[in-house]
Figure (cartoon, rainbow, N blue to C red):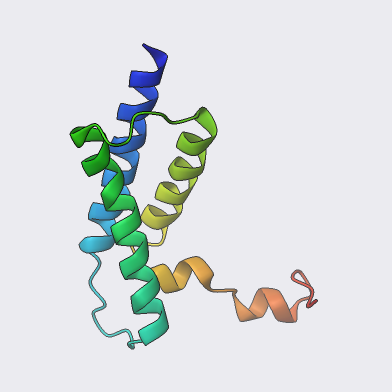
Length: 102
């Protein structure tokens, strides 16, 4: 019973993330090939989860998987589907010493 709830919740979360990534529009933003490939990989990875759950190929998930996918989905929605914003460090934070270089 709990496993079915976790599977369905994981499928919904990953499906929402994939749809948000698919519907991202660049508008006037530049194009970066590496970021585009990363966005494509994230879309395929998150989009495959609901398909695999529906076909019965994905039959076990853990609450930690659901939690990690939920955090990723929240980050994707907060960045409006812009994968470059997921990796971006604000330069003013860096200059103020809040983020220290390695």
